[in-house]
Image 1 (tube, rainbow, N blue to C red):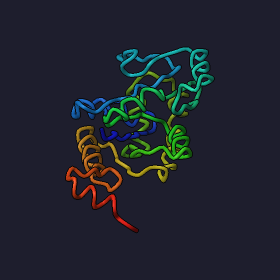
Image 2: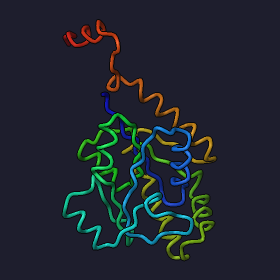
Image 3: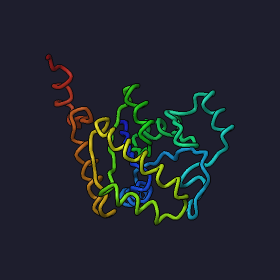
Length: 207
């Protein structure tokens, strides 16, 4: 069975990443999703085990000790991590798997040469990013300004990614992501010949 491939998506807080990823999953029913663990407080409208797996800092630190995470990072006062078992299991079963990972986590994955398609979502502007953070109504003024400054630093890390998609309208952003995923399937490294004679021909290829 051919392996699936990982789609790694990052975005500054307030860009609309969660909404985008939820819409992408609705558009591609076979797309699997790795639910991240976090120590931050659950927000209104979020569901434990659906949006994130919410755990205590002690639980998170124990998982670090047990090497349960593919990657993890501390963002502001909270921890975020991606389950190693969850990601590898679905990919090995042949499913394309969506990973929501922050910029620090992507840096770790790149260091370990983790194979996947890396996409960063940009806001239309820094001003619009601040507007969206305020509309959430979940953070203090101090926290909003802190997130904006962090977002500026994260945007500067764009060279770690393969693609940049600016989120003007969620529907357009999702369609752009689907186009990227479709194109990735035609890359040489993902090609698996169905024809026995072509398979033999490629196997015998000499550089």
